[in-house]
Length: 366
Image 1: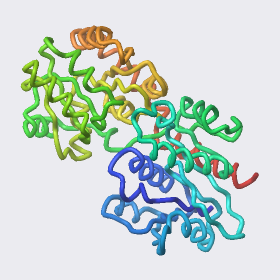
Image 2 (image 1 turned 90 degrees about the horizontal axis):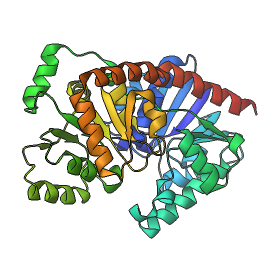
Image 3 (image 1 turned 180 degrees about the vertical axis):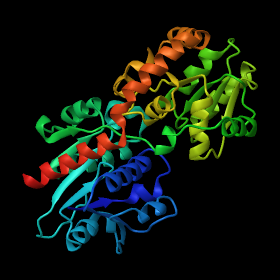
């Protein structure tokens, strides 16, 4: 079986779609014998290059104007690919007459559910690309049941065309760390003995300001790791006004291994986004053995399962009371940690590889 991938995000996105692309290719290479995985992109980058050493994985450059839209599909066909997999909601627009099956992964339709977070142009272009891909693909992968429901509702796709296959996460979050490694990261970032951790882009939808407001007056330290946007200014203004500078810590340039250690060091992980297609940080936390507080919305209960305490992300008092409860009750944290470790086994690499390969074979046989 020869599978071609749209690899723009694989090489050029640091998180989110990039992590999904790199993890999927890594997992398939490690758990699939005899298959070839062709990475098509206009240019590679250092990010993801190490995966080119994996069995069956190769990079193939694209050239020409609008190469991703107009050349990528034809290139996959010239290379003899049996199936083309668009990893980020898109498929090429041009193909030749050679037969090839098409599959696309759709991560979320947040631009439809929460249009206020997007410009009119971004909403229009996203809708056009996603709908075109959904209807031209032979099969669609939804990364959660919540996303599957949105695809049916907003893109008008029949249910039987969609298969839910959850995401995994980088293997670094499954490692155990020595006391020396834990202490080195604690000292590097001058971390308190106990703290709440938040990971994710610092944008309005992720709802970090509500977390900060909930922590006002509690004295509980918060450590934040995430790409900054203009939304951070609102948070900084609140922090300054309420003299919380010593309580809230923003960390920069955190590597993957250091992030995994931060999950392990944290007392509680909090992720009260208003909407997510899946929520990889949740399973990173669960694999790390950390108790979780998350939203009772969208796909987040699918990702966290029984290893989390759930809140209404718009209810400040609910968020505050759940934080205090979990932070102050170690026996409840231990219970959630145990349940989370059991639940997160469904996101192991072997499970994802088996389900994705089964879908590839099913698609090719149709």
